[in-house]
Image (tube, rainbow, N blue to C red; front, top):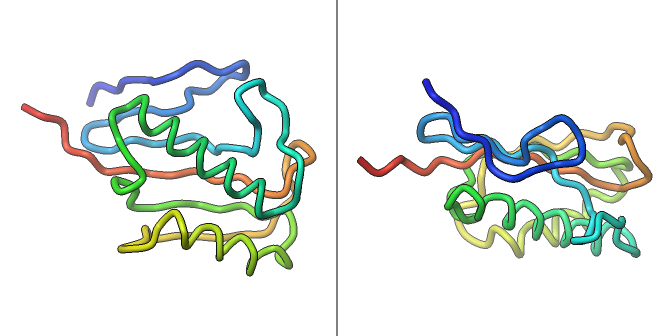
Length: 123
């Protein structure tokens, strides 16, 4: 199956890859357009991450409504409630399947989210 990569990164990964009818979004972190980690706590960082997911999906012609699965990594499980409240605003109807884990992250951030979207290719 041919695959198509979308976007560029300063690290060895593609922000998004289409494989058939699926689009895989690499883990998005809470950085702004200049690559700077946003100030604030889990609320601000979750909003930035989900905005980054939406922007990356748009490169592949998808929207948040096309997401079928997310994986969320929280640096601190005590942030779950606040994270979940923000997440619910981005997925008010028919939220995707989700896995949420607590783990140390590579840089000084509180959250990372990866996503899988389903959007059939047009014939």
